[in-house]
Length: 358
Ligand code: TXA
Ligand code: MG
Image (spheres, helix red, strand yellow):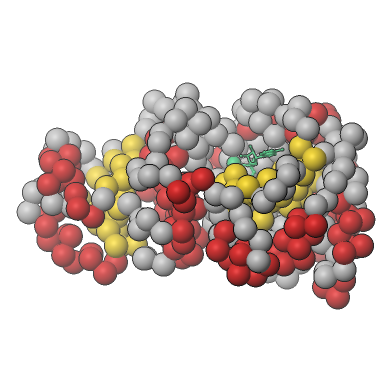
């Protein structure tokens, strides 16, 4: 993590106050931020991303200074402009996980703009952990609405350079450079707006098991109980590279995968293989054809998540017509990565522009 660079934060602060967009670093991915109380500023987010107006945004808020982080009244004061009701369980989650990669969906207060919530009665809020963005939020005093800083349907950016390459026609977009993102995938989203236990809306690096361990709170998660493979639906496609992306299972390494790559004799293909199995799988597949590029990847879910979008972006820049990725283990620790991989493979390929994404 970088130390706050105060002069760059000043520039970002002026831009946000003037109703302009600023790309902000967070510990998950970069966001495309605007003053959440300025509808014209928020409107520009949708225009620049090419995102439909009914897709709600996350409001980013400051956290209290370190010594006050566990004090309820500090958090209540920060949240009061945005939410009508803060359940007890949400306060416990906040005290444990904010600032951090956890977004909570609350009943919204009346004054929250429809363009932020997509017209819904709820609002998504998170306090990001990156020191530069925290500094910006503290000086600003308000909320910054920010989706991930990618064009609609594409991979979230995890560095300032990635943001720049998403918007080549907007060289004047101000980007607060906070270095590479620590987590590399988007935050966990929990809905705490209804009765009963919080519901998992999007898996991320904070898992239901981590939440249970830290707080005793049960999270309702459908994805864990769903049978594999999880159903593909019209809303699955997010985070897609231009290059076609295929997931393969370990049991396929011999036949189906080999057959598939043989059907594409001239194509340049990148084949990701678990680092422990690298040598073996290389030998197996090399027997079927050459000109495959093998890329060993880590079996640690946290490191995998951190590298995932970087790797997909880099491979997308290469001369590949296909990227093959092994299906991760079916355990909770891999849920967030599996979710992103399934969405990426579903919407990938040069002609895929009809998918839903954020
Ligand atoms: O890590 C992150 O969450 C990043 C960084 C920039 O904070 N942001 C991010 O934003 O991933 P975005 O817009 O790409 O994804 C936000 C997700 C969307 O799936 C959206 O549908 C959901 O949050 N969301 C926002 N408001 C909601 C609401 N009121 N109810 C349910 N879901 C909501
Ligand atoms: Mg997004």
